[in-house]
Image (tube, rainbow over all chains, first blue to last red; front, side, top):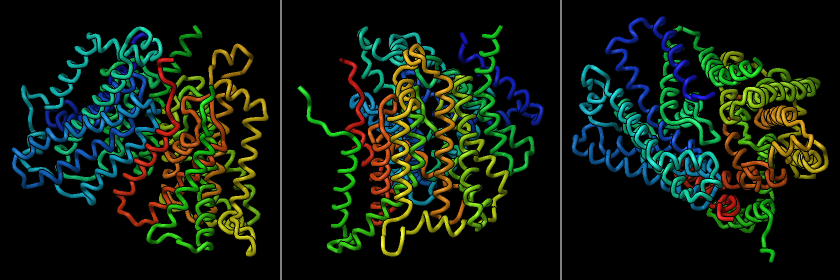
Length: 311
Length: 322
């Protein structure tokens, strides 16, 4: 398809329509806000993952990085911590994310290890660290700060809207720079990129750093959302965010797609979850129905393409 | 000038032996008691067999290249384990039908994976991930949280016990060795094997030299599914009980075993001997960490660190400057 993200938008429109039928107050301020703040952590992780995948890699340690940040904030700030301590540890959390991403990037880009197995190994490392910081679920962040995330609505729009807008703005800028071109070149064909003097290793390294940073931001968001700590909180996000990237039209083989599509993909996955909760599907059937919808979403572009080729 | 090098399977096996010998010095290791050492070694080998069989299908799809991977293997293991458990229900004569059913169900799921990947051009990672979700969902619907069944005595005897009271070698090891031999024949001595490596290296050249790439891809994923199904059959024979998360813990270790065994994750190069060695190394490390009685957090960190070191030794890809 010429516009890989087009299908993601179509899918979002369909999902939104179905959701709106099942949940008539979908666009009311409060519903919108509560939905968006739940979707935001996955959106942030997905954006970072999309950059890595675009440059031909994959990072399956993102969920563990989210967990580290959550464990860190929940134990070091605490339920009765001061806002000052919170912001201090937010900075530290961002540095931790960058560091974790740099470790991934070092092994993949500089030691040339295979990304999937490397980040699988580091995911154990990071999950272990998260569990070491917070062995049992507990701790938390001060109530007022969690409240800030929940209720902030500048211009009567949810906070998440602004975060997403900033995210897409940064991506639009990056894409227009030389670095943006490098991303596509490295993901498309690393060897050819290398031969045309693209700093392939550095670009690959940088994508993992960006991904780690985004995972840390997601960790901060999910901590503010839940208000509490759990060292396994990010575990389920890894595979979900990769699915979101693919639904968003960014190919796992690299070099095709962007970040905007995956962001749309992440929102769509969130809405599918919404639909399943509101359609009053029998609990036993929930997993199956959700998986079937996702497989159908993955299969549709292929079916359309086969159909078009036959004509 | 040829650089001195040892092949990954041999390196992994050597590493396993060294690690095992070192583990004797641990506070609760076997020390100088040879019979305990032998029993421990045999037990680790026995446990490796299950990971090894499940990783066989993974080896095939990874060799087939183009990001080939099977993330549905864990769910298939759970499904066929539950099917075996229910179908057998403690009757020896139902073991063979259950085995055939496990293989068939696994192959069918694999075939669906292959169809999505081949015809709809869905990337193997997300196709098999989606399939894992569907299979898990189907398991939940089918068993509604509880199943009644039982493994047959003959399964326990052939899978979980030694060959005979006099020979302490676990029977499943013999099964695994025969299985390994079959895998070797498949990969090295058949047209299927030759074509598999060919499509793993370059699908266009393979197609131009007359390999039916689509058919090969379908067959590979179907076979991988069947092998995961066989894994489920073996696993339930060992555990004797089923649960919804039975197969999941084998999933990523099965990929790691392939990588540690020197099979290129980008496809086209590898062996099942390597995967067997990789399965032994991984099982050994996990069992050692368990016997060392460390907290879960430290255990995970050590496992991650060890895995990093392992793949750093020979998992490196070619440099761009060549």
